[in-house]
Image (cartoon, rainbow, N blue to C red; front, top):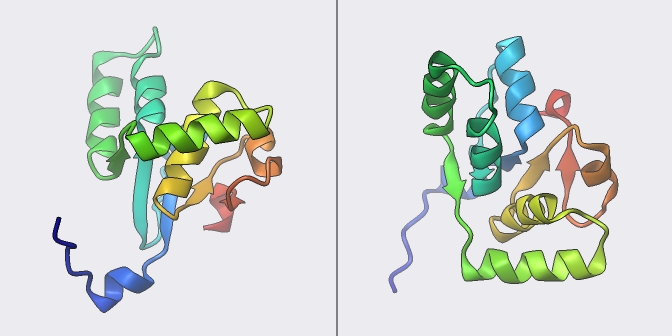
Length: 130
């Protein structure tokens, strides 16, 4: 399989995986994210779009926002990393998938979840540190 050429700008661009709570907070506060490459885990997409009180308008807004990020699917590599994280930590399965998604993409996890911030499995920052 051929490797896609990456420009010097892409090679130096910071990569971030946004956790569910980060996206909700950024949306509610109308925050603009700085330049970088942004990912979301398939788990984050599921969590955001499965709220029982989600209105049709909210769904449209969320889908539009999510389309601006690269989605990290549950690949074999993410699955294997998730298994190892679950074995080595006390993280719940969804959190383990999110962390594995960040690791698999060499991305910094942006979250306000204290358990994830303290897990020391992947580099984490809070939204205000971006």
